[in-house]
Length: 150
Length: 120
Image (cartoon, rainbow over all chains, first blue to last red; front, side):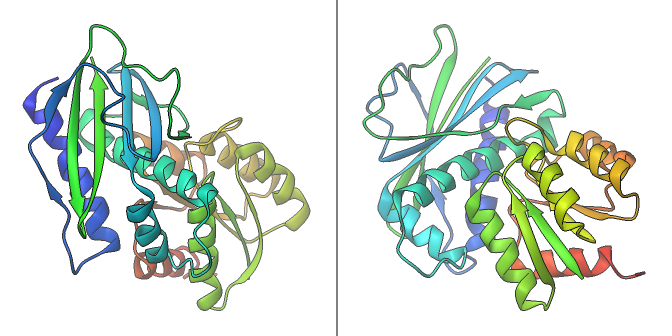
């Protein structure tokens, strides 16, 4: 992956958080290369499989404390259940990957989201792909976008 | 005016339902994939549908095609993260009337639906 391609995802993450919170911006720390996933996944992870122009995965991983705050911004007033957090991480991963088609085009094919709760078993990064972890901080909570693409 | 929401995310379905109910639309039902959407569509006969595209079992583009074949008068607003011109044009060619990109604000949704039905 090229630096410009990483920047596409960074811009989409920032746009996502801005859409739901115009008062406090998300910030991005420097992306870094990873060779395994275990240390970088948090409580809830949404995974989007990518085929076509690129092959690999886009994952959004976040702690429950961040997801509870985001769910409230969707207008949900009741108890924030684990099913809602799974739903949301899948939706965020899907939105960020889908928005990237503005730059990558319609051959950047997305599979429907798969949402997982830690501990993750059997989820590994594909061999031979460069995989980046992009740390995101929003209202003092940290999440990770993991981009692993050809 | 009856409306139906199609999206694989419960969170998004709830958001759209809440916003449109506040706008005094008559919420009739929802579906989490294209197959369920077609079944519900035949039973509910909504005038307005908001349609996600990336969904399991049957995707939104196929669902649009089938809905328009059942009722050519239905107004469909695509609400999707797929932010590329080809997909937007394909949805419109299949019979959708509008396209709203995720993430969206409540205001943007109301505005898009009002535009969708402005000539009814």
